[in-house]
Amino acid sequence: RSSDLDKSDYQIGDPQIGMILRELGVTYKDPAHLKIISGNGQSMAPIIQHMDPMISDVSIREYTGDGIYAFTWQGHFYIKSLQIADEDHFLMVSADEKLYPPKKIRVDDTYIQARILLVWNAKRV
Image 1: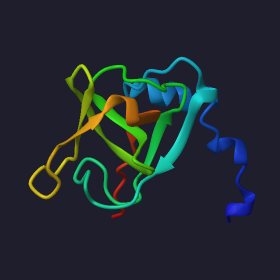
Image 2: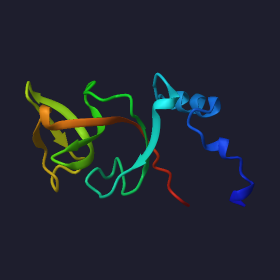
Image 3: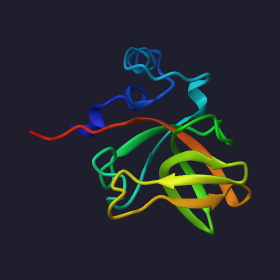
């Protein structure tokens, strides 16, 4: 029964969870900045499926290199790959570029909320 479970088993800051994340190659500075989020839609499939939980580092608020970021652009929330297009633009890239072509977006209009560190793609069997 779920009521019998100790809620501390699910804290990202737990040393055992930190050890597991590091074994998976996830690096971060402070576990207090790690948050679990999920996204809607299939534009990042197969990397991220609809509603897959993701561990993000909310202390990362600016571009730190190619990767998957959670960000706001034109009033909408996105979880997409960001790359540098030129001095003034990012390239917003979905996993399925045929259905969702890359889009140039202004750096000044993009508000990075977090960097995605790990996608939890567990499949039920």
